[in-house]
Amino acid sequence: MTASIASPDGLRRLVIDSASEACSVALFDGARLRDFRHDIIGRGHAERLVPLIAELADGGRADAILVGCGPGSFAGVRIGVAAARALALGWRVPAFGFSTLALVAAAAADEIAAADGALVVMEGGHGQWFVQPFAADLSPCADLCSLLPDEAVRRDDALVVGNRAEAFVALRGAGTALPILPDARAYPRLPAAATFADPSPHYGRAPDAKPMAARV
Image 1: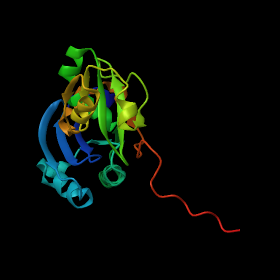
Image 2: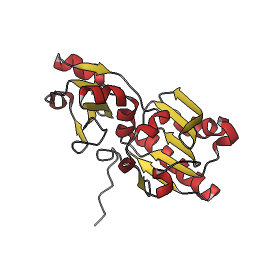
Image 3: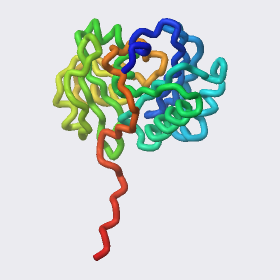
């Protein structure tokens, strides 16, 4: 991570996340939100993401690009990272990555601080959930896991955040659910350590497709 990203005064940043059913982009001038789009589209990120960016002030043009690298939808993660890399190449600016689950936590930063931590629970596909605990300062307390619901609810976190928070609390029968989708506007709440160089997709589990066995 560069000093300019950690100290954003005067730096224009484009933030992208398309790893969930939300397609979210935000343009910041330093710490000030200049413009944003946040659409709940389910599918169709490949068709919607670039037009959303183009709708931003100045076509979203920025000095640095930051992208959610997942975990989440295989297609959504790939599309977001590919778009960020392409724009960075075309604009000749750096691209950085961050965890989509961390972005979800950032959107609930005040509630997580008040609860002294929370568990982020997001749809993982194939009947599984992505789960990761975050401390009050939004630093991760443990590695990301992809778990079946019955395994996930063995955790006893009082506050549960994410698009499967309500299902988690209902299954466990205890806790407070805060249903939240990734929102690019929350990026400035992330700790500096959450941003990394060389963004690449992080799917959170093995790919669905299996390679064909090599022929003898």
